[in-house]
Length: 437
Image (cartoon, rainbow, N blue to C red; front, side, top):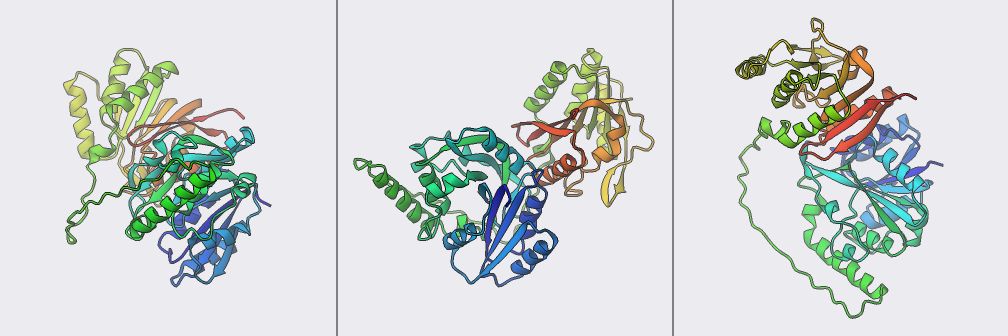
């Protein structure tokens, strides 16, 4: 028996299932089972799942003829042994601490709270960051959930609440999660964990895009049924739909985001400076250069910090930041040119000739994520000897899957490393710290 049962139903999702399953295998909380329900796939989805199941006993694969999403969820639930139940869509994936954070809350909260739900990140088809999910930003209430579905993924549910709500309605052919959450709201409380722990992938085959009118139809049905159950006979549901037409050039290649989209913004820089002062940080090392380099130079000049180093791999950026420091009257000795070399097939800074201080604060904002999915993963193996006993590590761009994967690996490899905070910035800033056992 596992503490958490995750249900993933799928049909022809061979392109996305590896990310989905790998994100489960990468969880920092390991007492789980993954129920993979094949709803009549015709591609290699089943083979992929069976191969994973052969490698890890916690993965269970159920093969079926096509029955549809709702009946598949009903059947998959019959195989769950966990105290807590969660759903993971086959084209989506989890942040490494998703289960640890949500199960920790349900263990501590009173039994009156039967559901913990998190914030989420919307990604493009390739898994790259698109936007911070908006749906969960609406405050939860038992009444408001009838017209605004704020309890989106990820949700972890007590088994008792799951069954008290009646489970999934097999006749609800679309938006069964909306229907189920409405019924859950009638039997238990919800707690919103404001951390983006779920990645929702947008692609052309999403049910969200393919079955829009069915979604409206079945959501309206669920709301009307709820009004009847709740005795709200004086209330009538009015449904309004809006349509927008857009012309798309089918031959045009998608443009890459501007580099400035991932640069540290002014608010984030101010937060970092405040953090340095509050925690009496004396030495800083940053990976990557930019506005933060100028900020650290100013902080050193004013005595806020004693020393800093900025590592830059790109010769053009290196010359640029040297010039900008000179223009402002700052020394350039703290900026080190460290070209990339391969470390276990991952391009990372060559620090063999770098003179580094003992590090109180490590700001990880490089190498760029477009060089390798987990380009920032080698940082701890390379810089661990320079870290102080209680070093803080700030990971920028934490809303990207690669950064989430890197942090997930670190948390498993270094037991005393803790994810202590997640700052809601434009691109996400994770705060980690080595702490005594």
